[in-house]
Image (tube, rainbow, N blue to C red; front, side, top):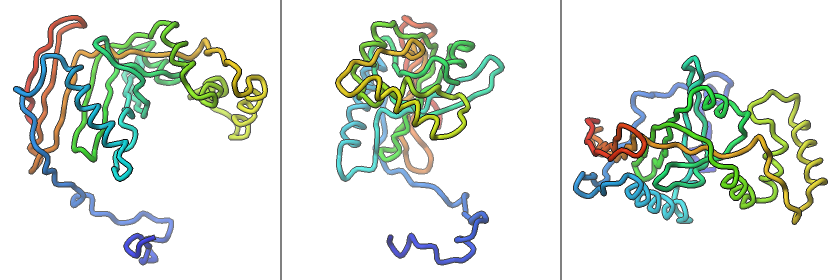
Length: 239
């Protein structure tokens, strides 16, 4: 540990809150801007460009960006109560953005009652973020099974072992469920895709590209369309 990282104040080492000047916590961005003339007519093409750049940054051993496909998925239940969590993007094309989860989880229950979601890709080291909003539908079973079989063996077992979002008595209970499944389906044996597990596709109505700029005068370019399948319009937003 570096000297600067050590706790030298006994008050900071206690269980009480540490005084932090939140008003002074900010980063000054110095990235180049983005211009409408450089953006294609299709947001998926632009997302592909940025995603490839983020993936290259994440693959750099000296980089600080991790998991370029990590996104914050926000949903709301029938009463409008919002919840968010980090999920991995597992596919995208001109139809939308795909992730997979337990269909009995909180986010899946939200989407059953209110099939709308927001996705946020927080590529902080690049001073970039992408925000997607749209309607949501389930992927077909064939697509779900195809992706499930591409997962590591342990992740396949985990999808069965975890009753996601439900209360459990202990960690030992979860580990025991996993061990039982590992004995039933040893490495090399095909694990069936759970019927309660599958994919969601977010069909975007807006896709916003945000680039950090100096003095908080950020660049925000947002694609919008009135309905799925309608043409896209590109607008600049005030920061």
